[in-house]
Image (cartoon, rainbow over all chains, first blue to last red; front, side):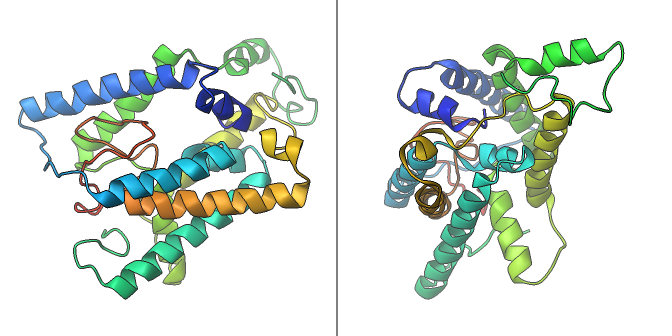
Length: 117
Length: 163
């Protein structure tokens, strides 16, 4: 899953493996969290889609397809000793820092700079 | 799969179980095991702690803590460390199964410096984009539960302060 060529084959719709993994994860996750809600053990607040979700997803998708990897597999690459992951991780760090700085400038109260503990 | 039985990393792991360990680790797990396993982690975390599983939140927490000159990491950062450590353990146990030379199409098409620059830029897009959308591939969707979709789902992650 950390192989950039495997993710590239998925993004080019040449290989179904990851999509099937996603479907399996979503099916169990969807069923599980809805079961928890039905049992009144957990609940959540629904919110509407906003422009930032679409914009952020588009930026993420561009980075995903360029690097043919995403945050989890990049960490796995690091553990496997793939030194290329250091470049991607440095970029992610920059992206997070720039986002936090932009948020600080805009001072939007409902979006925390970093997630509260 | 290359590197199975690589003498350097397998020098200490031998004996009757070595062959079966190889057999298990050499192949990608079938999707109907790997996918639901991820889903179970999501559900388990939500049931136990009322938190959403997301990977970028871990990077974010590490950046935040380091920026504050603190090494007191929360579970999200430890989740990242766990994935790094797990991949390391897998790499050693499997003798480098799933390893690859270069970096996919980037190093096939470009020289090393350009490939590294593209990865850096792509990482910045991933980091900024995921923060903007309130979650990365793994973090999106409680309503639609762990959607790995290309589009971020409107699950209100940042309003809850999670990603």
